[in-house]
Image 1 (cartoon, rainbow, N blue to C red):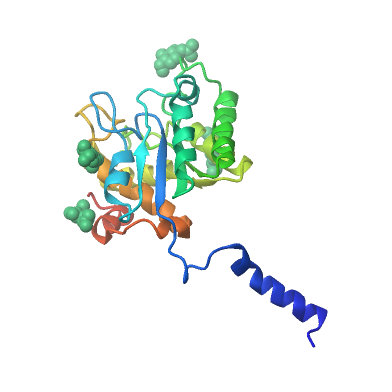
Image 2 (image 1 turned 30 degrees about the vertical axis):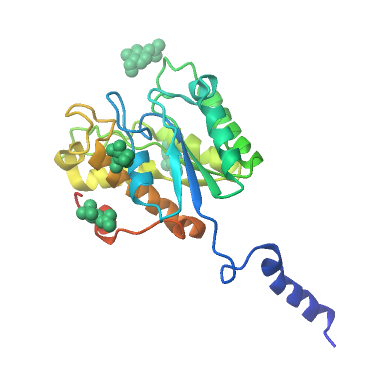
Length: 257
Ligand SMILES: *[C@@H]1O[C@H](CO)[C@@H](O)[C@H](O)[C@H]1NC(C)=O
Ligand SMILES: *[C@@H]1O[C@H](CO)[C@@H](O)[C@H](O)[C@H]1NC(C)=O
Ligand SMILES: *[C@@H]1O[C@H](CO)[C@@H](O)[C@H](O)[C@H]1NC(C)=O
Ligand SMILES: *[C@@H]1O[C@H](CO)[C@@H](O)[C@H](O)[C@H]1NC(C)=O
């Protein structure tokens, strides 16, 4: 006969297989990524362009896909007031039956401006509300700290001016407060731009003097960085994304791509 202790051990052992499908018997659902954010996430256009399209176009396995909801000029406030957030949530709701749905949340570049009408307290509260609403529809929120601006100080060699650190920290705090996922794109992109130096980093500029937005090549590079930051931390995302060892090595070795 089993002792009570052995029975408890056995139940603990069986519990995971009773509550979740075994990967050996059921193929995982494909993923659908909804990207909420400002112009540093958005599709390349005259006034903006971020990592979102590079991520969606080149890093997902066949069957998985998504939609870039990045909006040029958006703050956490305008994104909701202008209707973008409602579109994200209604799309997420529509996809949860057939896909594992993820919503990336990256704001800060515009909230930061003293003309934004968003205080730091409101910024934090808005971020936390986004995460809660994503969970309510059965999707997974992933906070992404802001892509660095490629503006350098006058040190030798020049170093990135970390002008988004307050927003970075508050985004990580919002993730913690809501027990949500997060990746630190701000630090990863800062470290990379410090490693490759000004000339290479400015090769990703949308226009020669636009140090904030990315051209198509920049979107491919930083889209890959986002994909790998997520895949490294979260195995379920690792399972729906595809590696590119060449580009990956360049990124993590600090070599210009
Ligand atoms: C992504 O794909 C779209 C549609 O084919 C294309 O217009 C866009 O330039 C691509 N962007 C990147 C960054 O690859
Ligand atoms: C707002 O920011 C601008 C540009 O950074 C600065 O010149 C201005 O002094 C700031 N205004 C206030 C009220 O802080
Ligand atoms: C942000 O957080 C880091 C610790 O992760 C801390 O060292 C830094 O001082 C914080 N910066 C600001 C501006 O709050
Ligand atoms: C991987 O990245 C390299 C370097 O950016 C690129 O030339 C190549 O086309 C990529 N391969 C795939 C399969 O996307």
